[in-house]
Image (tube, rainbow, N blue to C red; front, side):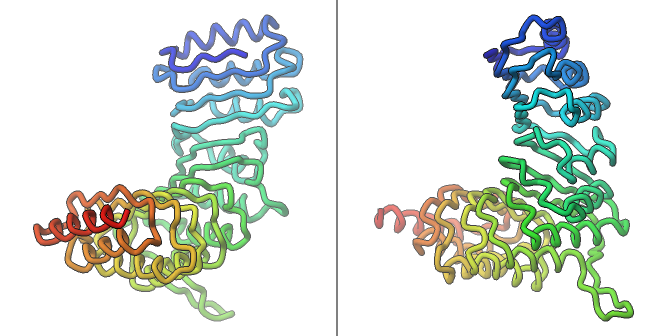
Length: 350
């Protein structure tokens, strides 16, 4: 066992460790943890991948690289090593706490991850943008089995920066993956739609009307129970239709594992918050683990929003709610006093 957590290691230092592995100096090594070494950016990954062989570390079972944020051109080599027959047969790899970013991944890398070809990866934080989101979910829905099932948990950040056709298709494919039950390992899901024009338009072909991608995605939330989803960040235009669909998911109890909800966008108003809170109140299970709602940079601080948050604090369906972020949300002094009264009432009940 070799635990090198928070040692302020640099990539070059890890390279020297890898040299020792390559010299077959650590044949009995079972656990290697390089977690949270802030000086490591992941440039050691290609050399580390080259050392992950049965003839070098035959007993290695657990490799943890939490906090490795980058890797660049080294990532394909590392992924190839994890997929190779020479890799130690019982090795599990954990990559979380940082994020593999879209610009460090080729479309081929993204396809391998979506198709489950790197099954030794057990935890991963992954950021994808634009066309690579489509590539990932094409692989997820195109596989005959459930290709993400090897993950203990997966954190996904999906960022849309362009108004190309990929956006609508990517949302549609993500919704399809949800409906197929292939998103169960996802623990954190963040959707950042930075496209100025809403492209979620219905299309008509010879077979009739085809729903827009965002409609497919929000509809899917109401069809599948996502027990392991603990954080959901939505930075997109929440139209009336999408709010209705999202509310249905809450009312059906599909998000009972949710601990944090972050909403952002110009259309996030007090009316939106009211609809979502009402859905939770009307649900049978509520949100028993829910701790935080983040409404930063919205218009949710008006009378309707504050009244709904007061309800959330006192209704008993969100018993662990303890963090409410209303920074830059148009919160008034009357609203602030109302929240204070609600907190006092909640404490008196406890």
